[in-house]
Figure 1 (cartoon, rainbow, N blue to C red):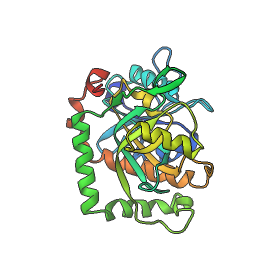
Figure 2 (figure 1 turned 180 degrees about the vertical axis):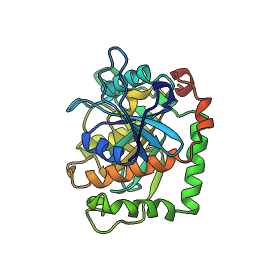
Figure 3 (figure 1 turned 90 degrees about the horizontal axis):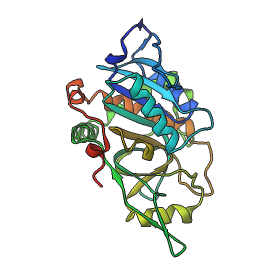
Length: 282
């Protein structure tokens, strides 16, 4: 990689990973690596800097064993203080898919997300309060273009993934060779609990009118930020949850995040604004 130096103001994309294995894969997606820069005051994040396509990207990982919506919000807020010109934050990694429509090894890209454990207790019963978050219309437009391109030319992403096989011997799925990937676009449910119970998973889906594609633990922390959530599916949030699909799911999620960035022109991000008044329609 070529090492170069940029200023804090030249970075327009943030990339957050929850786990070190996710960050390791993310770093490998960089086309070029940049020299480190100093952090602003009270920023405890550690950054890896580089470029992907036309974008300068700053990457960080949540603190070891400190995951969840609060840590994601803190990491994003600190990132935007140090890199004030970031226009979109990508949350990329693994998540749980909702069967039967989403399968192990698939990828889910958010067009909306919500906190499934946000609500109130009434007469001893939890009542979910729907509070949705959305990417901006500009980002949604780029996601639509990316979806159309993948429908018409799915081989492009597959060719890219096959190039990664030398770097990641585990890219072959646990059940065989690299297969044709399915990508889903829609609702991601986020909360502060690890779900390993099919009944609890199904209850969350019912509260959200059975529109959930993926359950994870960080997206709800990005309510105040322009964001896109990208998850590789590694389990079904049931009692069979294990680590078998973790590496494969992390790799395909990062690969799709890299590909998506190539469909977002810098000019599209120049008009992005931060703030939940723009990104939260509730």
